[in-house]
Amino acid sequence: QVQLVESGGGSVQAGGSLRLSCAASGSTSSSYCMGWFRQVSGKEREGVAAIDSDGVTRYADSVKGRFTISKDNAKTWVYLQMNSLKPEDTAMYYCAARIGPCVGVWYRSLYYTYWGQGTQVTVSS
Image (cartoon, rainbow, N blue to C red; front, side, top):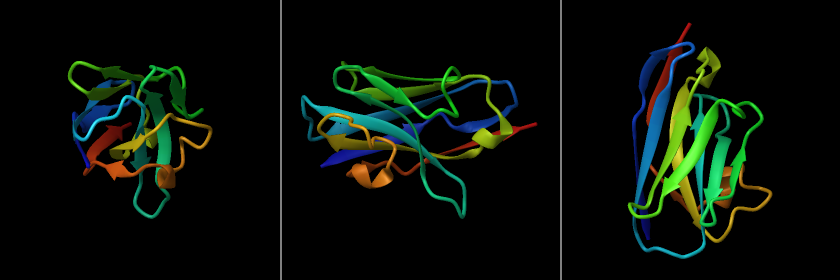
């Protein structure tokens, strides 16, 4: 079992920045894929970014150039640095994990086994 706990959400004005953190604990594996997703009420959960155990990153087109996913191997934490935030970035953000590498369908929520409880990000115009 893997436990994921997100933190760092909040309210910010458009153009501002936030950094989300995801602390992973429990069973570990040398090969994993960690993802950040977001969801607005009434809509499907959307893949935002992913990083695998080799540090290879993937991003949704909507956040490329603005968001950066990174990891701290020593602390088994994953981060999402969000810059130039827009009102359309407002959502509940979730950390997710699966054992094994990220592959082409990294953006699909069904691909992941473990989920955090989510942290709210609100961007005002």
